[in-house]
Image 1: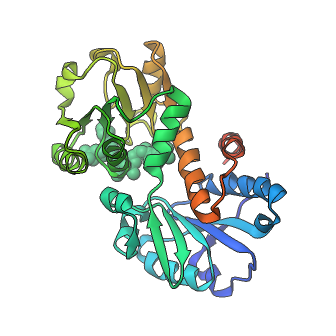
Image 2: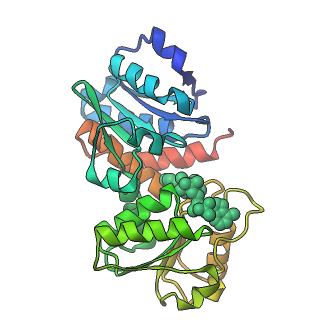
Length: 303
Ligand code: NDP
């Protein structure tokens, strides 16, 4: 695969690309496989619809303090759609006026669509999670007992989706109790019929048998991180989904497999949140299989 260029804010001053431009903004951004995933999808879509032959997805390293001016310049340069990743998702929520209710509830935006003189903001992470669970674990958020580890941005997206899709119960476990309680209040507000409980890590024996465990903490990104939960200490879960996909097997997933539990990492979530974003931009069903293959090969390629 040819080397992917990472663009900077200053590159927008001399932007000459004449096709339909899409981009991901992050800081850092070099690790992002979104360009490979989206450009593979666009190449496939162009085989059926020549309109997409002129579409291209770029990546930009944008510092958080430069986000407001970057969004202005990208709009002025006719970019059609933007993805936002760390640390921009929450920041953008304060900059974009037109945001879906669901993204407003999450408090984070990961997809922007150009509309008139403005950007419209969406959050496709919850959709990505629900579809990733379905694909990898054959489970639905709706009607399930959910154990959610974490209360940061990714966990907020998961909790809002659990409430929107009416999970049976939601058990939130987080190192910092205050944010867990804030998230419980948010979920309860969206679906007052869903049982929401904040559970202390030492009380895991209270968790229901057959629950789906979702790791939305960043514990597992580094190989010496602690386990976010000891799966052996709780009633047997139906499955374990770790939103982390790099490394592909965290200690949590290794423990799940050792216990014989269905388990999956967050690659499918990444693919489906991207597919939903591309659907918003293109108003066409994207080739999810092509996106999945592109992500898998990009993850294997040397950094
Ligand atoms: P945030 O920084 O917003 O939240 C981090 C969460 O992890 C907090 O709840 C924090 O607890 C907890 N945490 C951090 N370190 C530890 C630890 N050592 N032990 C226990 N808990 C810990 O990050 P995000 O929510 O944005 O991301 C969380 C994870 O989800 C990341 O690994 C990210 O890669 C992944 N992710 C995957 C996506 C995908 O498409 N697959 C999409 C988005 C995120 P506390 O509140 O106490 O600080």
